[in-house]
View 1 (cartoon, helix red, strand yellow):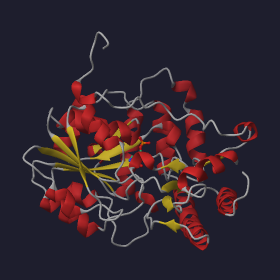
View 2 (tube, helix red, strand yellow):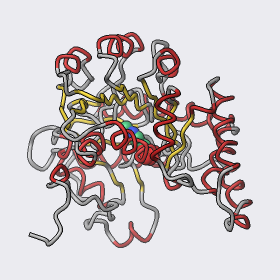
View 3 (cartoon, rainbow, N blue to C red):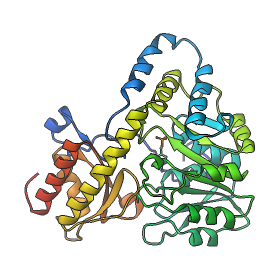
View 4 (cartoon, protein in one colour):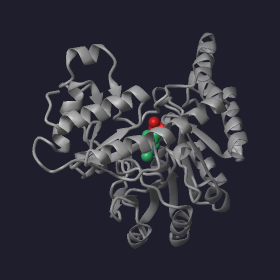
Length: 371
Ligand SMILES: *Cc1c(COP(=O)(O)O)cnc(C)c1O
């Protein structure tokens, strides 16, 4: 026992250090370009305008941010037709997930997340002293009925990622509305729309109109995926006024750094880059899914820029074997055992050359080639 014990609610949480490159990576691959398909990062890199904006503020790093923060919130307000006063910026939406739990969840209160949901939801609940409650999915899709069945007098918050990570599956707007209507008013619903930009369905909502219509629904967004800015750590929440006021009362005043704010503002205004990102995904996701199906594999349907892909159960041809094989060619994909789906891998859409590389590598793997 250490002399000083951390809170009981976080006993047993794994120490999450940023992932190191897989030890199986050959020297050549780690020296050259690694194909990163394991973290759902945008395929096209950052917007050139965002890079330029970041360079141009370098000489002002002696000043606290502040004015620029409202500039980004106003740009988001213009883009989405929302009230910038209720846009809260964070150091990644990961940080906003934590602030929401810290601000709302009393010790012992319950936080519902979905079975194959984002791993940070139960983690943030426990850091706040709350009790995570998992609602079983229907197949690999969130089940509104299962979530509602798990509501108790102690339920305080419900997290729904839509589209969901790691499954890529998506609930239609009517189901998200039915969830809100079925939850007691005292329960905060947090819709994490980290992949909203990629969704091409007509019946989709990221949650903006629910935030407008209620005082207990929050939408989370991020610059890490479609904007290609994961390294920057920039996310935002759109909140009802009372929630915005609460979050402003707990978050550090200068939580988002000035270069991020400048780059974020330029990225929001770069429509051409956003259109190219969406078009790229709409072209290559179906291409990848079709190629994998032709190889006899089973990709899950997805609304985002990544998919779960099922491998055969046979030793040597399964998901456990394909990851080191791909790593041997410098291609990183995500393992799914931690999410309770060990027969799958998760991989994202890359650039054209990367997509062709991964399909060729998976074909060779299934044909029993050497890495
Ligand atoms: C990637 C992701 C985020 C974004 O996290 P950041 O901290 O903004 O990088 C949030 N939620 C889900 C479900 C994600 O997959």
